[in-house]
Image (cartoon, rainbow, N blue to C red):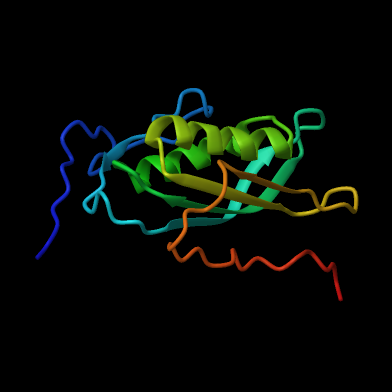
Length: 155
């Protein structure tokens, strides 16, 4: 049996869309979960996430991994890609970016569970990794390791 997804009301999927100027302007969209009542994990990895240091304006880079167990909705992936891209010219500290992304997704989706790992590349010699979760992962759901090794420098 093939599950169908209701795309009624989506404004970005299948349309030309510009990168939003800021996360506040970005529109996150959702679609119904085609398997409500089934506990499973959805993962998005953004290995080339960028934002700006709010003090120096220098670029900051991160490898983000977002895992969630959906309830009634899934995040529509094009809107997520544009939302993440909207941070490119946004000045905020690593912690602010990582937690803001998580909170926006939680507000949109009301997932059973969500976690984000923000693995930030070092500036000034110190990597800052930021982790956020809504609680304990649900029992019986396979939640793989995020697979991002700790920063080891040049050797």
